[in-house]
Image (tube, rainbow, N blue to C red; front, top):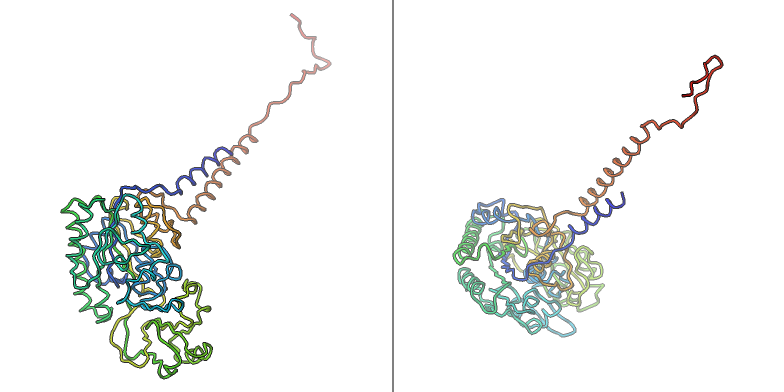
Length: 451
């Protein structure tokens, strides 16, 4: 009995343990900015659907708060929450260094060096990384850029970016084992038209789908389709905005009381006057805006413990826009609470590391990092992700979650206990032989014959 239990538990441990990724594996990580998860259901996307059918799909990816571009792209490649990797917004201010960061002034390594992205880790052996416009890849993070990269230029077409990436994957020396590719759509059009404008967004999503078709055809033409692992995902979703849903700060507080560091729909406020005074004015400003002191920010946001997070954070309700007094210039936006489905992107993947035809409901974007490290055979840096959440996507992993494992163990114990009880009961039902006793002779019996 004990031996059977030991063998069973040993099997569970062996199956649940991580296997070592192939150090020769190659991986291409692709981001289509602002690709909301439910676009997959709303629009006909034949190239992407073919990609999914031949690979895996995670229907919704929970991204990090705040749900903006720079922070989430860095979370994907570091596996860290924003408070941990230091890219806490698209616009930041560091009071100690008295430095300012914006998406148009992002090349100072100071802002990026609190974390180690995967392209840096990948180059610590005799391997190379490559990048086409992914945020941060043209910056010397820890004095390192990808060995092959394109400096960011939005005017470079998607096709030109793909041509560079597949060339590097196919013929570089040393060989490129990890590459990233970034495209600005459908984010730009989502801001312009709003995600509910199906007429215009359908055209944009058709173009994105054609881009995916172009990428897959290039990989197939060079014989890379069956050897390179490809992950397609995004940084965030998109919510519709309205000029009727404005939160106007000038009606609540004078501009001389504060500096607005990062803008809507999550705004970072640096008080110039007494913090409590500024907080109280903002707290009573609008019912559709939550106002948090830094130390009061909900734990689930993982957005407290970094000096670049400002003393007061404003979070608009979905669809509402925080302005000082300006008019609304866009019909879609992101940055809202990361629990909202409208903020969630998706993940699809194809290649020798992934199953075919498998779908799961959700994972976190910080889980992508340990999965990528596993595929590449890299030892990950400390991170906030959970590799277990990605195991079911991978062919070399035994897919089981904790509740299922507990159920199997309990079920096995019940079976073994039942089997043992049956044996014990069966033994009790077999009549035991009577002990030998000498035959007693009656008085009228004849004397026994003795031969």
